[in-house]
Length: 340
Image 1 (cartoon, one colour):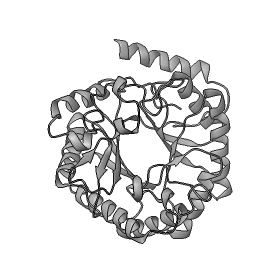
Image 2 (cartoon, helix red, strand yellow):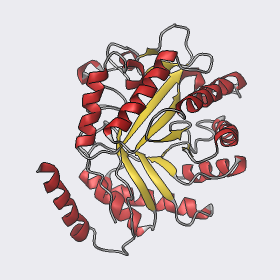
Image 3 (tube, helix red, strand yellow):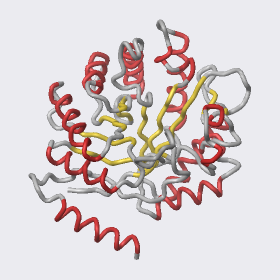
Image 4 (tube, helix red, strand yellow):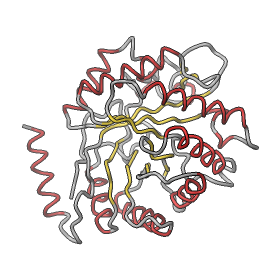
């Protein structure tokens, strides 16, 4: 009954509150979901960087699935029961000496491969999402530490090859898994970064896109997610075009107050059109958790700017929270419905 009431309210909001401007079919075309990045989190224990790297505090689904299957079954079932149809798994990874599968949020990727246990967990997670009726899993590679090109003072060929080996081996292995549609983010929030903040990022993105599309094509990836800032989407499009075919959609992480969302979407649309993409399509890969005002602002801005949003994925962060990065332990509620 609660879900039915929520759907009725949504219809009223869309037909009355957002009635101005030209109507465009499928402004938000698909149901989205959540970035499922941690489970069983006690927020009171997550206070500094050391806590993030403690496997007793920060437990990622991909590292701990085998020993916590029932807990994750309950978490994912709750997402589905609240209407969510997509899940994103963030694979933060780094090369480190300790012979463990992970250190807190970090997966060990030394030598260019995850541990057999992490790969097994990924397969089991994908199978579970298929059994529960999810229609898509987004797998987001996120290099950290010395694998993160933002920290490279000069080009690091060995780290590039390690990251490429990791992506290639993981994608190749997961292709044969019983799973929903899989979409890969080849570098979380690396899209559009450039000097002075990340002098090596354009080269990294260009080369990774070139080798990836040669090996796998563009059908299962949007390239590299963009942490929204003016100019970054244009930079990403330019970099990808120089290295291979352009993706069909672009992944955007967008955290803005609702009254500023319109400006951000307008700038994204303008940057895409200046690069020759007349009707850009975006996946909002991250935004605030269950935020009604953010939803209304995104739909209204998309309609005004004649863009398409394929789906909206939420992050466990509440707008206005004093906690950085993660402010809620789980994200069952979902307000980012499809809209015309």
